[in-house]
Length: 385
Image (tube, rainbow, N blue to C red):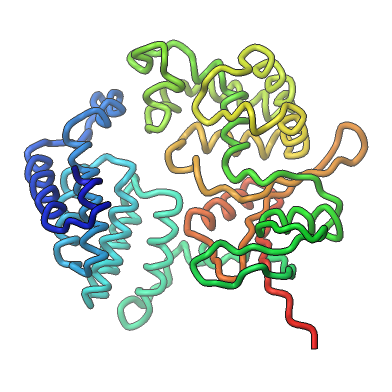
């Protein structure tokens, strides 16, 4: 009913849904604060309170569009009060800080951002966004001490600038360009053409997170589908119920770390081939059998190398929910001889685009893991005189 009301712009019906969901959600204690409760926290997404919380957050977005920030703030505070152990807290906290600033309350907005940075459930892009807000809002005289994370946030990400002939220049429409062969293409295809030519003779694919989730699943297949209590309730599941929770890694820590050591030691290609041959076509969360060929996957893991690949897989294993989106657009590779190569990850941005906080968080993380990363900015070619 909520989705239908939003689609048809029925404001009264939307407000009624918000009120009902908020009232019923408030009567359910959805916190999982003890260790014993955390083990089965992955069942919470099947609870009534979880469904009501989704309706309430849709209501927050509606109220923000209507500039009813005070009402949106009240709902966000209720969500944060009730759901104390929830991966969605980062986005809720960020929105609360933003809405408070819209209300002309920069001091309270700063306090919310600072408190959010102490919350262990605030991670990845939401955490980076709150850090950047804290830096911007926390200047003298509000704050005199520079936060310890300021140097990390201000790190420079290497940029490459290329030019293209635009097909359209309208705001709000995805940029299209003429490629080197004269055919129409997007910014990602234009960047692939650049890197294949004057950019250094790279091969590559436009994949974003897709190829990495496929590689992760193939390398961790036997662990993902290992027999642990309560995580598989029927034979149609494509992943354990706890994959996107904090329970996944600690419950399988020894198995995961053993596999990561094999990856670090250079056995990733062999593991990849074995999983492909045994399970090809079997449905699994994150795996796209049709989009990525085995030769592409083999080239990727070979050129990325064991240490970087193991580090990336560890982050996905420890926090799949936070890190399963937002990876760079392009994966590039080139071989030096028959068995050695190098890889590069590139985020591509058109003339009117900028990095999202999740993309920025991934780029900085990849840099820390030893990856070769950069941002490729496609600019409009100036008209010849």
